[in-house]
Length: 130
Length: 399
Image 1 (tube, one colour):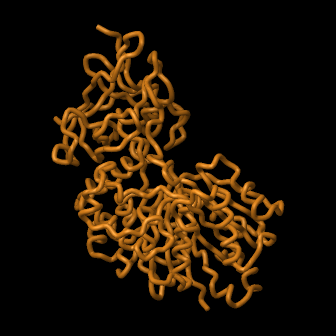
Image 2 (cartoon, rainbow over the protein chains, first blue to last red):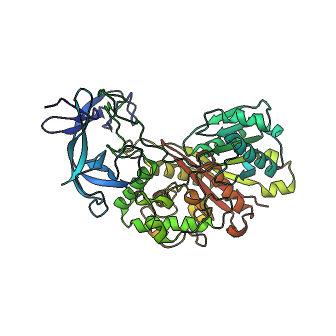
Image 3 (tube, chains in turn orange, yellow):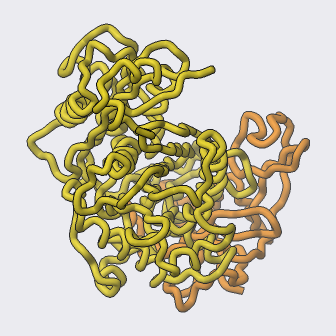
């Protein structure tokens, strides 16, 4: 089996793939990217927290025009995972308004994005209807 | 007590394609137009604030070389789609602070023919995966983890409003676009002044559902400029200048305070609401007093949420508010009678001054066929992602 790396460092691979956020130990604000200080309370101490893998689709769009090389159409959305908002595509369903609905329940899933010259696979994530 | 500031002269160029003019030509046309409109000259100006995003920097000094190098301080400002409003506010602050009596603000952009203005930040996958950046990504994420494109981002902002309050649909958003395109037919300076039927809008090319092409702001060339003056100095000017001067009753700039999810989908709501609240307080008026509003309809989906953010309607009531017809030009609160960014066009750095020109044009009673009769007070709003929000409230001179 090819070696695998996550597309982004906040995706944790393994038997139960999930997302991991940096949580401010002072105010609880969560960030997926590296932060110098908390944007909410200016604290500088963070701990890693696991994000639940099921959520509700809070907003979406179906992108039909994108930068060259990006396959369209695709569904981009915001998923509310038990109070933490996550950006991701809605996948494994038809990209049209009959199949994608506001408020629908979705769960995290992973897929192979591609592989590099060493044969290492990049693993991305998306959300599919439950 | 800080000085009251007035707009003495203001102008916008025709928005559209200007293949024979460069960025500095357009800025000079607007600047000289604003000076002429004000009945004043460059030697009176104590400050120049200039905005341009795509031209490579230093627009203020480049402009001085064409309209007058007088040695005054120049502030080159850049604040995304709020750049024009930021330039104007910079000049206003200088006058308000008593540093000078006159200020000139200019916003200019050459954007005709530009495509999507964001997205595809990294063009191709690397040969060997290596985590890069603050997300430790090994390959481009646009299109794989959501979308970076503006039509897609603002589509989600409109959809999020629909999820929260209900009542939105593809057709509803298209109807907002229908209104603005209808309004544009009366605006000779608009880049596009063609009326579209609802069916034409809905059947046009889909960009990012629910935004079709005519529901997106139009990339174009254009510039706008304004001369501001202190109340003390205005009193020394002619009766005509005093009558045409427009009072800056509020000038506000905000950024977005941290809230959960603002890192996931830009929150254009809170900073706009904050700016509106501050502006109404500064001006001592409420949303019901507004005779017209020019708001940042970069996409049809954005206009809806800003009805609510600017408190033109009750919280959560934007759909009913629009459906009641009040935002059409013959309604109680006409919104985007210029045609808005969807038809007038959106030469980014010019937009934040051009929308103020539109309001001033009506308050002066000079708007011709599209005049909102008896307009005495208006509001202009812009928002740039990142984010920055500018809100100005303008009032007709009393006498």
